[in-house]
Image (cartoon, rainbow, N blue to C red; front, side):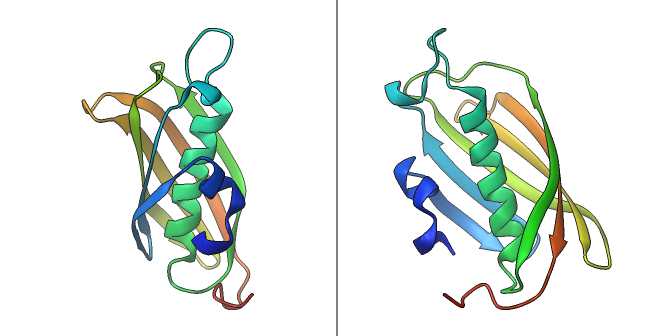
Length: 128
């Protein structure tokens, strides 16, 4: 899945761990990722968290898609910050799964909290 993810490659995201129900994805904030206030654009923080959720949801090689997600931005991320998004499954019922994703910096400060829901639709992830 990561090999075909153009956005993750463009943002130089690293998939540090991906197993069913748990994933860790990281990236370093570059100047191109900042907004007019010189902090990382909130949409890119969301993208990092969404990528971690996607890998946690699809690591079992059964296609799953996000259906909803919400984010709480807590602290700004700045140029040079290495950010780590950790996604864990907190509830599952049938084909519906709830994920909590925490985005932190290397100092351990929580930058953002995301709660997302995925729906498993079936079919292999590894198919082109």
